Image 1 (tube, rainbow, N blue to C red):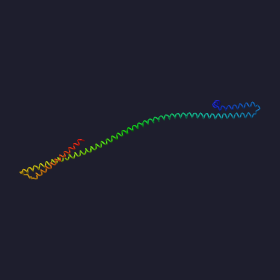
Image 2: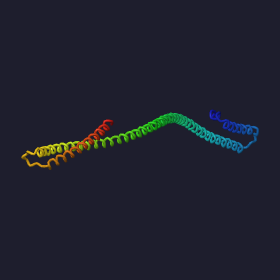
Image 3: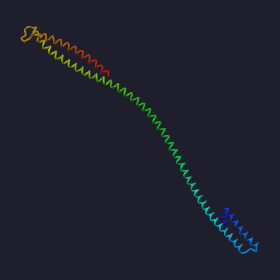
Length: 231
């Protein structure tokens, strides 16, 4: 009990007070030799009551000490838990900071890439416009070339047709000339007349017109060929 009381000055003082009461009661009994038995009994009862009070107080004190130790242990555990949580929060904070820095860096790269893509897009749009313009010009050239080739083919066909007509006219004129010559000689046994000479003259006129037409057609064809040669 001395160890317990040394930990609590209040309990030690209480014990000293009761002990003093017991001593005082004994001294009083010696001084008052004429004291009766009931006074002694009363003194003993007081000492016993005070002793029980001391035991009760000591029990309460032990309970209080145990409660304080439990709370102290809980407090220490709570402090440890808070320390661990604080360290964890600091670690997560550092990780989040690193992730945020990484995301910021990625965002900057994406912004730079987007700007480059915008520049590339503008260049491509410019190239597309140029290509469209070039394509349009080329299409115009192609259309004109197709027109030239179509016209060339038509003229070539006309030249061939005129040449064929000239060949036919020459053959016909040759026959009419022979008959006309026989008619003019006056000694032919064939059935010839002035009509043959008229037909011959007519064929010569047609032949002259066709030859003039052929010359014009060939000249126009030469112009078309020259234009196509420039393309």
